[in-house]
Amino acid sequence: MNSDKAVEKEKPLLIDADVHNGIKNREDLLPYLPKAWHQQWLESGTGVGQPFYSPVGVLRRDAVPDSGGNPGSDPEFLLRDLVERYDIDYAILTGSGILEISLNPDYDYGNALASAYNDYLIDNWLSVSPRFKGSMVINHSDPVAAAKEIDRIGGHPDIVQVIMSSGARMPYGQRFYHPIYEAAERNGLPVAIHPGTEGRGVSGPPTPSGYPSRYLEWHNILPTNYMAHINSLVCEGVFEKFPGLKFVAIEGGIAWLPHLMWRMDKNHKALRDSVPWLKKMPSEYIRDHIFLTTQPIEEPERPQHLAQIIEMCHAEDMIMYSSDYPHWDFDPPKVALAPFPKEIRSKISGETAARLYGLG
Image (cartoon, rainbow, N blue to C red; front, side, top):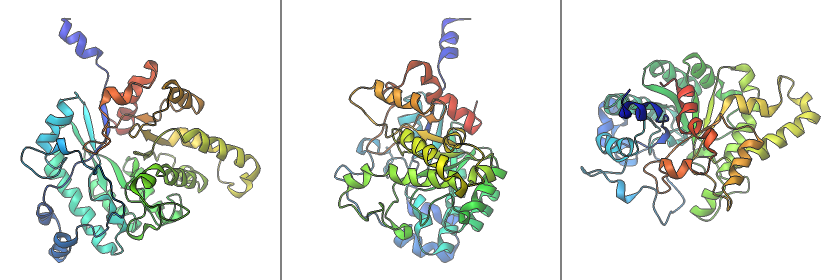
């Protein structure tokens, strides 16, 4: 074996679990969208505004494609600027400016946009490179329609997960959403949530105490919403009802995990009669069904403290690398993976994602 092949064989798998691909122009979606919705889409987009101002913006200015448009809107440029530059084996596309369709009060409009985007994704992104794998968008506010959309698109070989916004009207464990999980399990797809929509549209305030004043405050507190959803999924018995379901908490952080697991296990010992359908400790369901991503990774003063947190809750097989390209807090692989112990780094860089998404 020559040295080049030896190096190639030793290279750890690298999968980016959060890459934001966008739509260059709103007109690009029109061929996939029923004409009845064209004017509304062109004039208002998803129709769900962002109440918080970021002084650094949301998208990186140095990631604008050569052809113009928003960062992340050109598949060929994204291949060069991210996938090839960092030698990424697979990029899991999670969309941009589309997840909030579930928070528009017009469910018919949300359903139409979800289907249009998914067809656009397949034709304009997944066909460009085998290194692109897609997250199909659904309108989670209409679970029956969402389940039909999962059955329609879920069998495509390059669709690897269902994605919905983390902003919602009610916690994700409640039976209202169960048609979504039934369809996802039936199609062998994990369900992911992504932040950025808390406090928008019909989702209600982004914290239990109401609205914060600034983007910084809102951004700091996003993990509390993830804790609420995971707590709900476990306590409502979702993973007993759908034992094959996997749930991905994208861009929600990691360090809060031990606190939630410990608190749930402690309270379950005294209050388990209120959730008689649970056959295991809450922390076991979390370790078996929940996955997290690295960006935005917490940055303690001593990096070893992060490794200790992972060890505390046995999360070695739950974490996947993500860059969040092309957002302002983008993390290249070396930066994101450096804080993790060498013995689990290959799992985080790609092995866990490969197992979850069925990628070689």
